[in-house]
Image 1 (cartoon, rainbow, N blue to C red):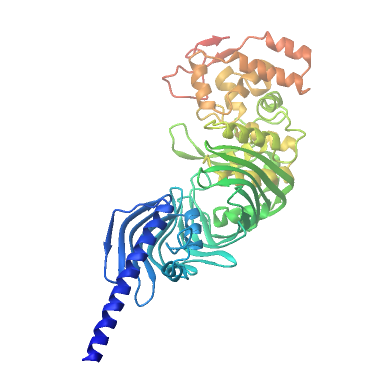
Image 2: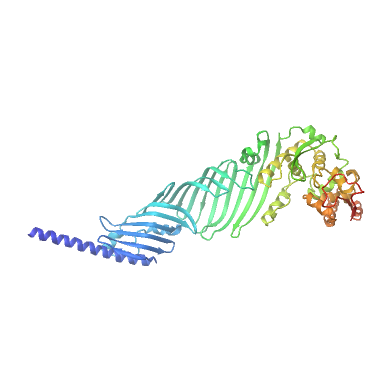
Length: 551
């Protein structure tokens, strides 16, 4: 009987002690949660623990939190959504009993002593962006969270994150690998994407071949300062500035440097000429970016660019012979040919007046700038694009325009501009300026199905190119870069006299014409002979059928 009474008494004592511990633990937990300004929707006490549901606080929400006292104190969290900065606080004091209420109470000390805290289904966010999802693991005594392809750890040395996941941002895709470590408030990171693919209609019609990306740098969350270096294929990248993910404020200075051959290699088989091209020199881009709103400025750099090996018949080009794919006025593809033995051909001497007017209008430094390209013109196009001009003009020399007409289509992509540059460099390497101009004035389109200044001079003025006045030559130059629209306006009697005068001013300023010659040209009349707008364009304009239009 005595033994039975002892067992009953011991049992009652243990139950009483357990209930007391649970009540004490619940009270301490409530105080600690309130101290952290965390609210809850309901509490369900149990014989060995307590369950909270619907906990909410700044940067934190928890679907369920279960405090268990047996067989040892532990906390289990489910359905957690937490902001990145808040997770740091949780990991430093994940037990709800640490802090100002841990005091001298034996129960509090017992509970505060490295109470294990486990979590399932944790989502880590930064602002509105989800950084990690479906994480599970421990928050205390050490933080160690994992999910498929993700590991997040915090120990006495600091934070460490490892992430591998598919990346699909539309224009950028691949497999992203991120390693980050935070020590004393500084986040170091290493980003790798061995198969990064760039895909955007402004780059090329098709996705670019995969290229390896690697970026290494550091970011200070308190100041937002970021510094990084890296590479994409053969391109070298550097970046520095400020990044605040919470407000999405970004202010970055970026630099891209590469050899011309490495830029060409990024496009792979979409530049078929690369197999036979020998390209040298370096290019670069300095870029400043800020948000919100998005603002950017870019400065282009280039040095010692040269390319050879693309032209198959240089002697034919020197003589003025060329064959290329063109598009007729009705939109059907056609083959165009030009040469001394083909009607309508205009030699350099016969078309010199028009050629110099086009130089004054389109590429005033053509005779003196580096072979094939003008950084100033490229910069002008970049500035217009940064200012929001939908279709910025500029950037192409006469040689680049000739390269586009002879070898390429009219796609408005970086791929086409790069190929255009390669061909322009080859043309400048193989031909002198006179040969280039002779080809240009015989290839350039100056109206519907009007290719070359010979047919254009006949269509607009019923005379050969050699007989054009300076004002007539300047008019033809103003038809660029939209000759079909210019033809339609002229057919309706609309002539942009101010544009013609600007060409004459440029001729004088460049020294291609004397002041006296341009003074005479400004007073010359302009008599156009064109088909009525409803008639199909024709290179034959008998005066008995088409009236003279005088300006």
